[in-house]
Length: 314
Image (tube, rainbow, N blue to C red):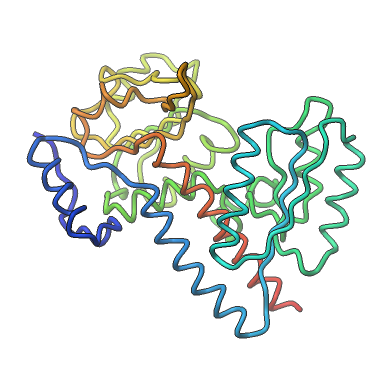
């Protein structure tokens, strides 16, 4: 029998009576609790909006510079969503949309300029970059005090040793999804499927911070299905559409799907086969509407944190 999450719906961002009725109905039908990233991200953005307003009353501002090289459609959507989030929260936004043929030297020169621009509190370079630009050089060029993506080695090192620093936005968003959905982390077996520097590795470190017992699995892992079936919390970030089926799932587990893919007919899906897995789990993120909105919310949080730290030095 499935373990149903706590009934304190306010912790899940569920404050509307109609939404509570929907949750109860799903539970009575033996269906998984849907972790609503849209609602939780909105809750966070509203909290940040109040903090930005307080900062403004003190005569201080927060501003984010976003650099996009080329016109990749997916990147353009992400950049537009970041601009909209800034506008909603009250964070200033500077957008630099550079042509595909922009040289590495030109990009590095712009980053250097923004590093010294006092009113810019955070810098984000939208990835991926064109093949002729070295991403590592670009990440290293960003002032660690403005590294709101959390990709700079200084940020990664702080995460590794448990020091304060900017957290990568997607893994930080996953932690908030779990906490605000009242899903217990401490003492639970967690499998992180994927070992990228952007999601998999930092995700494992953050789960360790929350006192989970963490295993990182990847393309060379043996007996992957058996390993995943031991997970109380399964976090999937492997970049393969609908790869995870019910054969990988422990009954009653919580499943976080970080992947997003566009199938034929423009339908979106994640790394998890939602229809196959959902009947077997206690909680699951949908795609879209799960992890994606949280990434932007946590970027906004990092930008506000950067603004507060830098304002104290002004």
